[in-house]
Image 1 (spheres, one colour):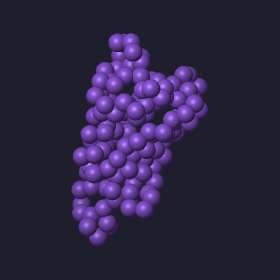
Image 2 (cartoon, one colour):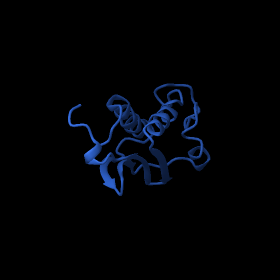
Image 3 (cartoon, helix red, strand yellow):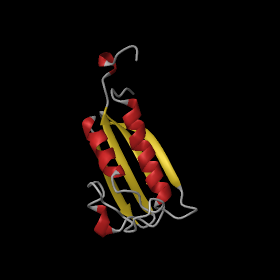
Image 4 (cartoon, one colour):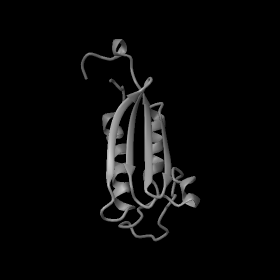
Length: 124
């Protein structure tokens, strides 16, 4: 499986998703990262079994300054830019990012187009 892209920025997307899961779920929540391929896409999923995302907030998550926690404290909510930046990075790689959430089952899914092996560079 080969993806042509900015490794640092793609790492930033995964780091952001994992940090959000850790920050916005209670202690004891199981967080799982999976990577695979489906059709012509690499698929990265970050799943947690926490309380879920408030439906009133879920539709705005990827907007700039969207905050699930209305406090201004970084420890509990950050600036509201992380998911907007993640979305911009993913879309800059011609991919998509989405979330599905209900109590006990939240999954962020990133899909990035795979590069055919014949078109991939042989050295990086």
